[in-house]
Image (cartoon, helix red, strand yellow):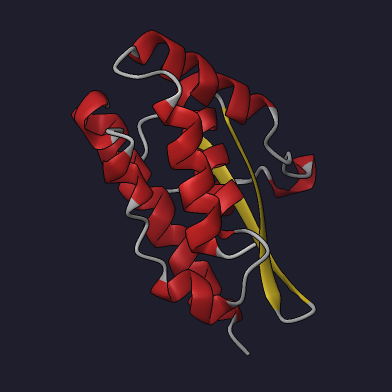
Length: 138
């Protein structure tokens, strides 16, 4: 499934809740629970994402021409946010990740409903994942 197809799928999921943000937050928390967890050996300071208020660990690896991410966070909403981004970007080529526009974030209204610190953290997560993809590009 392409990045754009995954984004459309996520937009559809969030549209089911209409304007009701309590349900959207619960869905976000559920997404965090389904996040492929990072191996504890990668939960080190050098794997934390700078710019996040909460602790977020991200591990990136290159397999069979694609970049795969695992992550974790010590905060449930933040874990959902990183889970959302991992779902969209993981398993794609470095070029696909670097070209991803991530427009679904605006379309589901996420930026408007996050605190400024969480919104900055989300931007930092995407930036770090794209930097990792660039570094792993072969």
